[in-house]
Length: 154
Image (cartoon, rainbow, N blue to C red; front, top):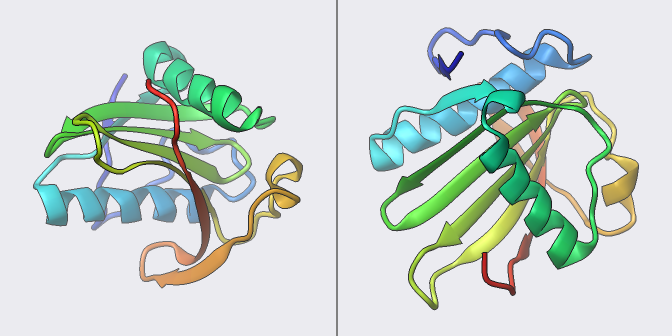
């Protein structure tokens, strides 16, 4: 069942099994606020098993671009298109959020972003490969993030 993410009344719905559920809910709400403010898009997520195409797309890009496999269990995912950009998000039980931003037109930006919820350790599969910058968020506390540019066609 899909869930519209409310960034005014942050809820852990769907994320309860995460050891950092409140921080992950804040991170998810932060993303929802961004898409509402920038694109007037309602950020809706579903249990990961209900949107296998979104999860498979993100998993394929991670695997083919960087030989990466996220060890944590995916809890929620979403995929949508805004302003000529195909977006996908996966929120993992560990507190990790992975997003793919894929410009549909050739020459547009295409990247994978990683965001770590406050209170979680950097996942082992990412620790030696990426440096994480910090940013503050009213909804999510301190978010650590990193990214890489997508080179292939997906």
